[in-house]
Image 1 (tube, helix red, strand yellow):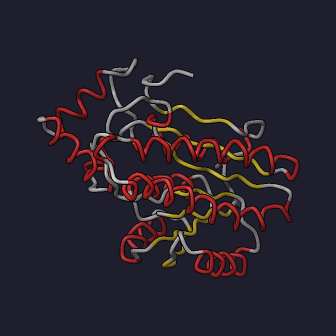
Image 2 (tube, helix red, strand yellow; image 1 turned 90 degrees about the horizontal axis):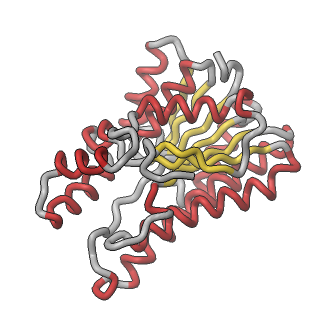
Length: 265
């Protein structure tokens, strides 16, 4: 178990990616704290983890609100006394597929403000606690659009580029304290889309605008990768577990490329 005796906090723990990572962390020995807005989803994930012999706790937390996050982190510290790993897997439905000339400033700013804010708020709360232990791992999520030209996803592109820049800068600031920061950049994940995550709504709208089915969009995306397939949830989750473990102890300030070769580093 590569995460034995570790404590992990996952924001968006009821979503497709967050729950998959939570299961992987628990399987590798971590005590998992699941945070999010929908307690029913969080409890369902926690029940699965506990049934499999792991340990999990849930809490309703607004990952955009500093007070909500701080109160939850204080509660985690009471239960676990330390926090070793955190992942922000919170997602927001936003506007895509609108040409730049027609895109409103509000729709452009929305994903940037939300994604950057939630990563800032949660990472800051974690860093304050991790610094005291001179160790910790902060994981963020991004997508290939951080490096892609348009059209149609201006706000999302800038948001993802912002998350990656935030992760690099944070790694430089927190490195001397022993805290590592890793961004996971994943392509479309068919299982996450099928599970009805916020990405399904976005991709469905984009497919409709392109005059194709969602299945055709996913197939086209897979064909555009070097591996001729898209990443799986288990691959993303297992990579997260590895990056959070001591096996990746020399890695920080980097972006883990999980695009199946769609984007090359």
